[in-house]
Length: 96
Length: 489
Image (cartoon, rainbow over all chains, first blue to last red; front, side, top):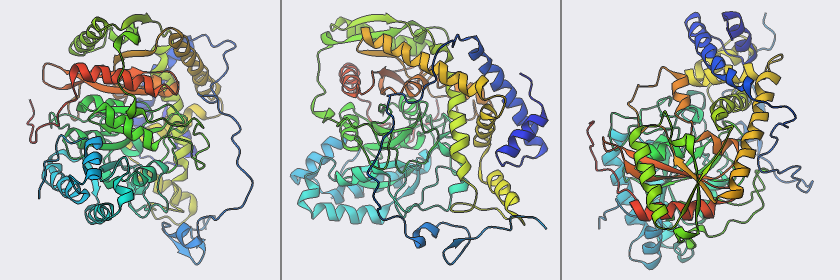
């Protein structure tokens, strides 16, 4: 299928990626080629074939509902780019 | 006293450390010397744990219990998408460059409990997305048999480190062939276990329904030994299977006369390098002469495997990589507002191939396209699983080449993503169907580059594929480590 820059813009916005014009052009061409390659799947008869949920067939694995120690706040925050006491700090949510 | 490290196996090192014939400290010193001498050219490592490894070796030498363990004093390298507490874990990406996890992967913990020494982290394609290790944000890794060629990927650093004789074993991860393909390119053994055989806890996620951790080694015995150590149920990964892992390495010998080998005709058809076809057919003929039965098998939906794989793998990747937002860990790019910070962080932090796959994955999951791509691919996946189930009703294992070509030149496919994806044509099926697969060296092409033979088994059939791989190894022998300084041919 053809894929235009507007589709790349839309998908990039969903994926929270910012692309410059050169990237958009290359990626639109790459995506178009890959999507064309994927068209072969349209020829497979999937009538009444269920989707694969788990390859080995495991389902509903449960554990006892008991409390156990979790990561202490200091360790949980140790990799954060910006923190304040026991909090992650982010830029303001609503722009001015 | 300096020892000659090249050519030692995990089983051999552990035996000699246990008997006192070698000390763990000697092994670790020799390993660090070999890496220091050879890795500038090969580029296998992103981090080497010198002091820590020496300390650990001394501890092993002074601890009778550790010295009696199955991997006593064995230096093991880890693909850098495996978490080790307090150690940089980058997944080959700028976005994780500053990240030090607070926990250790279960597979790595099990290696340590078995007496292994963690020697360092190996290079990979960013987030394990690639077939050449050229997508690493940090360095280039070369093939020890010809340094103008790629080592394969994404576990290219692990394969190159083993092939160059720097370590006897490394862990990798395999989502669509990322252990088996580099193993084939570098002339080493690479094993992808059954989905759920090894805990994925502490593995940086790429495509969660396909990812498995496994060993790269020089010998089949070492692959079996390491699998026995790392396999088994784990409370931290609810997709692990409850089946206990036997001591695979204690039961490797078998009679070719007891083996029925399925040979999919398409695997030796058009598109396969003639030298690879020649080597695989020669081994199959020798196995048949030794008593094995060869039977053609049909996998009618196998031709759709690469397309199916790239829908499912990218869909899962786009979801898994949504977590890299610059808030809790990793790299953050500046912006005045939160949405801008997310977008800047991800755009500056991810490389081109990762962006390409996130976009494709987001597209196939997006409203209006989900059923046409993702839903359809999951159904074709079921058909592929059924193909293998039918095949394994008649045969013990399925055998063919691991890759359609031997190691390609650095840069050859770097600008053609689709061409790169097609180099996974024989490996993605095992991931889609959750089956165990192993690549074992079986010959060389006319340029002296290694050829890998792939053996796929039924679910939890690791014992079968290891025994079959051992038969191939007995015919062809494990490859010695590549001599240092291999100039390009």
